[in-house]
Image (cartoon, rainbow, N blue to C red; front, side, top):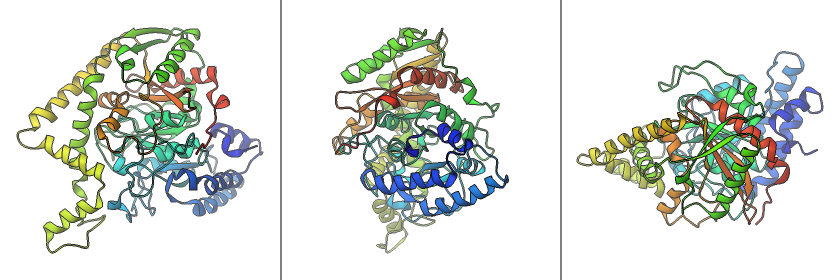
Length: 489
């Protein structure tokens, strides 16, 4: 038995039946990291030594009955833009290369309350700005299905770590598709919850009105388990929603009879790869076989959602990243003669090209004379996007689209063409603009053996419906039993 192949709910069952110990589970994943990390490059900071020691302590307390949590001792990976007290939190940037967080993010507190064990901080696009995990200052993460290809981004490290079985699950953040797109590229399940369902306190901000912490797992049941842990109101996050606590595992009923699924024709246009379309169309037929009602609809937002997203995201990034000035914390250039030099040189040397590109664009759209023409107009379009989604949801339960227009592309293929890179998010950004939940699940592979992701979009705070729809489909096609990462070089 390969322990690292198991889902978390399977690990829990083995532990309950005394087939595995907490230490055995963690050691198996640490051994897997030692074997695969040199090829995948999924982690920026590893905490495996501390994890092994912690697993022994937790196991001892569990055996004494001092700890009774069902997730005690389960390992996890954390995207490196979430603060863990005493651990480096770099956002994959030279700017924060040596920053050690002085406190825990709320999601980390929740994970600690369950006595889960972090194995390390995962690689990402710098400050979450990218679609391929190539803009990281430290390394380029590889896709476990083909090491010559990207894992997606910006949470590519978390996705690759789960897909390569170096962790059973992981946390990521999603600003415009940064969980769903890498989940699709890596053949795993990725959930971007409704905006406000999961606290952002302790998440280093990229675009505050769009960012949302979410999950990477091997299957939908694990997604529901981890969402149970991290969801909930937080007084320290002013955008955190006060909602009744739910048990998302109880909605997984393996039944979609009568479920009304909308398929927007605009998401299947010329920019979508032929093989991606074919996989999604097969998935649609499977839903019909399972008893769902599938209808084609018009959702004419794709043409302007991407521009709206980048105007809003870059404007907020310009504001949020203003704090990194070489004075209070973060990188400070050694080359300066005055305060102005510190500001200019620290930011010029500390930020990478993509981050600087987005800061400049954001500053431009917020500047006098352009604010009304760009930023204000984008916020008006944002309202329009929300209303268009609401119109579709008046008669449908979920919306089904591709997760991305293509499968994972070659490393370096789009690095010199930012516009083409931005188009990787064409299917996902509108979900963040509207603050909706989105789930990506694998629905097949292309002719090169690369996974294809399918996106299920739900109504605000209706994670239950997309989770059950994803679970039912997953049970029908058994993707994990049929396809495995090949680590092809």
